[in-house]
Image (cartoon, rainbow, N blue to C red; front, side, top):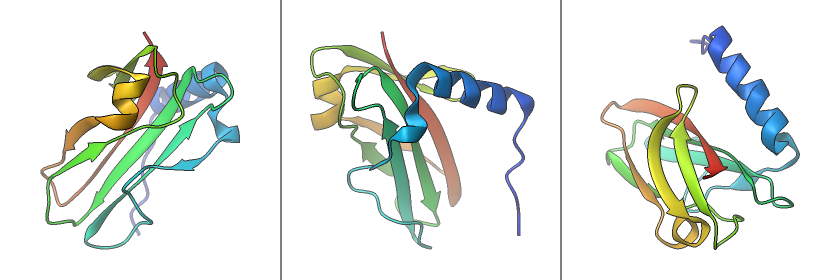
Length: 124
């Protein structure tokens, strides 16, 4: 079994993000993603549905044949603009309104057979 090795920066980011959004109280399925299964993708979202200020999403490829997926995120304020940044280095992935995130989404491209990412969703 291979365990993920978290670095101090990842724990620091996770704690700061939890303090910012209190996302651990929330868990929603990521539309179009399922439970982890060989040959597929899975994902989750933890969006604070009370404040709609943001939260985190996770997307993982488990040997799926396709390299690209579209991610949509629900439960955000449709009128606000959100930044999607890859954790923990805050690399910008997308800048969209809550409505665009729910309806259009953004694409992720994983070229490796097994790959994943966790992103923060925050109001701009």
